[in-house]
Length: 259
Ligand code: 23J
Ligand code: MN
Image 1 (cartoon, helix red, strand yellow):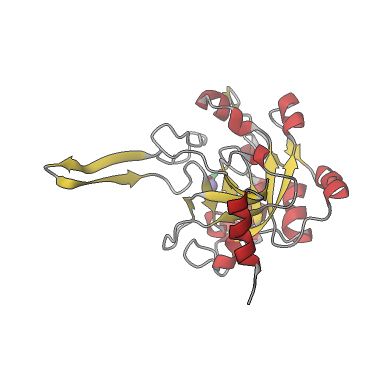
Image 2 (cartoon, helix red, strand yellow):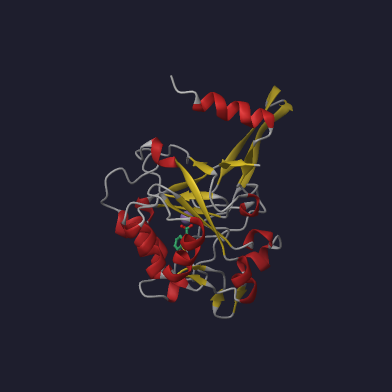
């Protein structure tokens, strides 16, 4: 019998391990991505009460939720992008559940992003991180820490200018490196999506979505509390709702981390 799971719960109770919530609150104030006007937009989150201990249900309270699959802290499945549309097990309900859990590699580029909101992670910067912390293992969640989640004002979070949104992301070569040379589970970011704000104008458009999902990899958007994690040594559990043919879903993203 494996002792390791009992050790996990013991160390959580003893405070040697902690659970870190990487999830933003989901509600009517949750910002939604602003695509160019020629494309359909995704509805934000609305919450409508069915009953609240009243005539409609005297002893119970419950709500109806409505939101786009890609709202708030959410999971991107490979089928979300055209490059992943014919892959096996590419939708929320068919992905094998073991692929939701992996070690976290947290790449802190918050200093670079403070100087340049359009910062793009490059393979060189990833290799610089690996020289310090070791190779990114296969099956890892690579989390880009930008401190973007500290922008609590929605207009600063979206950071839209006349020429569109400005927020950090991945150079195409970085996504290719992580997908093909490192075989990650996927990438997680603090911004509204896993591509840079300006990435609609890149070649190809939205190169991180294009590359990751084409390789059967996942995305996690609108994460927070990445500053609570060590560069290595934590694990992430990110399991989307089992939406039939779903391209993604809001989810609770948890990390288990040394204290
Ligand atoms: C659709 C088109 C472009 C993007 C996105 C969705 C997302 O960021 C998303 O939530 O997957 S960039
Ligand atoms: Mn998405």
